Length: 154
Image (cartoon, rainbow, N blue to C red; front, side, top):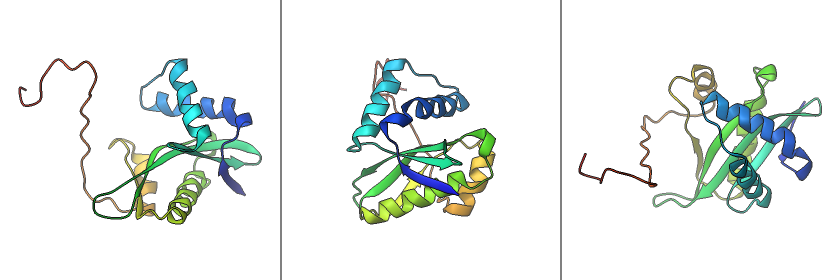
């Protein structure tokens, strides 16, 4: 049976293993300070939240999420990161995490839960197509750090 619960201080090391594996999947790596900051935010549970999935007593999946206001409906819950240990994929861990997140969001008065994934992530997209509705939106990202080109001057 899969147990979903809030991450606790003793989960830190395994959480970081899973989070590093998630970021590696997307070709990213963070410095240690970023992992420490993420853990502090998730542990505080004020702006960023986290849940873990345990199977046979072992942490095998993580989800990070936040709530934000919406101009046209109740608050929205954004599922920022979702990762399942590859050794247990296909056993319902990701579905259990998404289901628990949906229930949590409902309790918080959110109108919906949404997330994004890379278009090439075919395995995850098959699951997501079963769990949710793809509404056709395309995501654009505008970095705000040291940008050399002005908007409109491209």
